[in-house]
Image 1 (cartoon, one colour):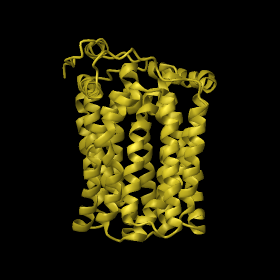
Image 2 (image 1 turned 45 degrees about the vertical axis):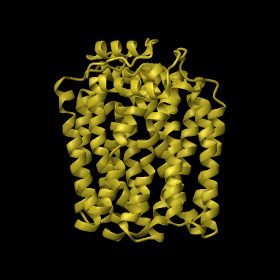
Image 3 (image 1 turned 90 degrees about the vertical axis):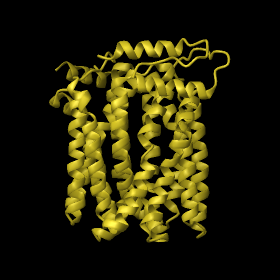
Image 4 (image 1 turned 180 degrees about the horizontal axis):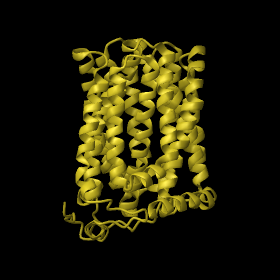
Amino acid sequence: MARTEAYVGGAAGVGAFAWRGGFGRLWSAAAVSRFGDALSGTALPLLAHALTSDPLLIALVTACGFAPWLLFGLLGGAIADRVDQRRAMWAVDVLRGLLMGGFALAVAAGAAGIGLLLALAFALTTLQTLFDNAATALLPAVVPKESLTSANARLMTGQEVVGRFVGGPVAPLLIGVGLALPFAADAATYLVAAALVASLRTGGPPRPPAASGRTLRREVAEGIRALWGDRVLRWLCLSVALGNVGIGALIAELVVVVKDWLGAGDYGYVAVTTGYGAGTVLGGLMAGRVVAAVGGRFRTLLLVGVVQTAALVAFGTVRALWPAALALGLFGFAGTVWNVLETTLVQQRAPKAMLGRISSAFRTVSIAGTPLGALLGGGSAVAWGLNSPALVAAALLGAGAVVLTPLVRGGDGTTFDGTSLDSTSFNSAASDVTASDSGQIPHTTP
């Protein structure tokens, strides 16, 4: 009951404070950008499928879209802790808008091939490593700590409403006019989002002056050690990492499963992704109530992991369009509840001065297996059948849920105000990191 009241209070805080303090502009920027992503995200797999029927090549596009996290994710987090996050975000959006605009011209000229798709996916995600870490670090400066769960839920819900129910239906219309048009529209939304973020008056959280001789490499190492030193984030990160191998397999071959295995065509693909979007919206609206009903955030995470596993089993075995759309809707519902809780836990447990580094370490480790999962999805589709990527994803998500059992046995160690059963060891480690003027990497207890 206490958790329910804390969640409702947080929602009120967002409504009364954060919209005036800049959350409204941040939310609008996220929604506009998500609209553009929905357009290009629908068109890109269809373009890849039109250029090649090889599942492995299609999977390679997805793999290139995640690989930069392995190469630059930790660096992006360290930079996000050093710079003004607001400026970093709008500058990155301007660059992404220019890249997407150039790609739209190439598509219009008939010059887009698989190689260009691979390069675009790699470049956009490279920029995203800085943008996402900066956004995670900026939100606590805009929203009170007790309102973070509600703010994250509203951000994710708003993005899905705009993406799935505005961008999703519009995408086929634009594609019908010309395949380059969704990419051109996406380029414009990046520039609009950049203007909205640039208009924010709120900067990032205050950072202590950097000690003499401190390097990006040392600060990256501090973020990794701090993440590993927190029992809750460590187990959560390992669970997400395992599940994301399965997610990589699923998203890499989703267009193949829907169009070739289900035989649903382009509009069937839109119907399935719209079903997924409907589930994610409902999950964002219901996240707080689900946690209250289940009786703990770690129990909720375990439950939604099991639900996602069951939904993917149904998606990969029932060969009909509407059951597939319903299964992905359930998958999306559970996934949004998971994402809201995961993001909030990272924001609440990490010290503000290290939030960029800790969130980047979390993302890098958790995303590390996604490119491998994408290739696994392509290989399984060739070896075991076009529906096998969904079943492979189900098995890996189920294994990821099992990883959470140590946290469930230990109880819900975190409250909505950030206190935790493990707070003593983590806060001690964090203090060592922020006070490390000698330049030595502090030791944290796993």
